[in-house]
Figure 1 (spheres, each protein chain N blue to C red):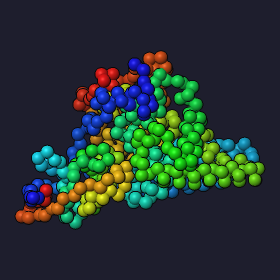
Figure 2 (tube, protein in one colour):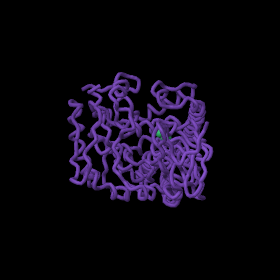
Figure 3 (spheres, rainbow over the protein chains, first blue to last red):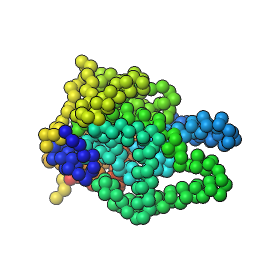
Figure 4 (tube, rainbow over the protein chains, first blue to last red):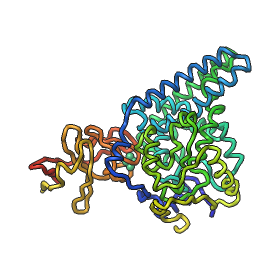
Length: 353
Length: 103
Ligand code: FES
C-alpha cells in the first residue's frame, strides 16, 4: 500500500479516521512502586557524562588544531566530529525529555547547546518529538520517521554525511529567520512559541555567518571544522543508531514492541547514544532516565521480543528487510515474543480506514 | 453547589505519589507531596488528554507520563511545555484519615 509521509496529506487524515491517533498504546504492566523508583531523577550521572563529553571535545579539538595542517590531525577531527554531530543528538533527546538531569536548568542549558549543534530549533523539535512519541511511526502523523517506504537507498545512505538533515535544517533556519513557519511545523508547534523560534534562527544564523567570516578572514578551515561542519562529518554514528530504532519494523501499529528495536551496544556507542539502544523501553516509558534504562530493560524482558545482540547483528537483521522494502513497502519484520509475554497489540490498521 | 466528596484514605497514597480518582463521568488525580499536603487536579493532561495517574510527583509538582509537561499541583499552573494550558485544581481537606475534595 502506498504511503504519504506528509503531515498534511491523505495519510494524515486516514490515520485519524482509522483510530490510530489515540492513547490506546500497549504498556507492559509494572508495579507502581517499581516504576516510581525507575523514574527517579538524579543529577550525578548526567553531570559526570557532560563533563566527560565537553572535556573530550576540548581536548580532541585542541590536539587537532595543534596538529594542523598535518594529516595526523584527521583522526582527532573525526573523533571530535562524532561527539559534536552524534553525541549531541542524544543530549538533545534526553534533555528535551527533561530526564537527563534532575535540575531543570541543567536540562535546559545542555538542550539549547545540543539543539544548536544539531541545527534543530528547540521549540519545533520539542513538539516534533512529542508527536513522535504520541504517534510513533504512524504514517502521516510522525514527523521523525528516518526511513520511509519504499526505501530510497541512496537518499537514506546520503544522510550518513548529513546530506538530508543539514540542508533541511538550514532551510528551516532561513525560513524561521524570515519570520515564517513551515506548513508541517504549523500542525504540531504551539503558535505561542513561534516568536522564540524566529529569534533563535536569527541568532544561530548570525553565529554561522560569524564562523564563516572568521574562516575567510584567517584563511583557515579551523572555525568551520569546529562549528557547523562536524554536523556533516560526525553524524554517521547518530544516523546508524537512528536507523536501528525503528528500521525494518512495523508501522501504523499501537505497540512499541512492534515498531521499535532494542540493541545491545558497546560502551562507547552507549556513551555517545546515552543508552537509547534500549529503544522499546524508552518509547513505552519515556519518563525513565537514560541511566535507569538497563534496569527497566531487565524488568520488561519477560514481555519484550529478544533484543539484538550487537550493532552488526542488528544490521544483519535489518538491512535485507530495508533492501526488500525498496519495492515491497508493506514488508516488515515481526519478531516472536517469549511465552511469558502479553500478545502484540496491533490496533486498528490505517488500511482499514 | 459544590460538595465535599470522600475521595480516598490519606494512607492510600504514598509520599510524593498520585492516584486516580473518578467521580461520576469525571476523572481526577489526588496527589500527596513530600510534606503530606494533598491536592486534587483534573486527571487529564491539558496537552493531549493523557491521564496523569502514571505521572511522576516531585515535591508538589506532577510530570505528565507522556511528554513530561510539569504542573504545579497547588495552582495547576503548567511549568514546562509542551502543555500550554493550566490544570484545574480543586480544594482538598483531610479529616479522620480521609481525603475530601470539593467538587
Ligand atoms: S500529554 Fe501531557 S505533556 Fe503531552
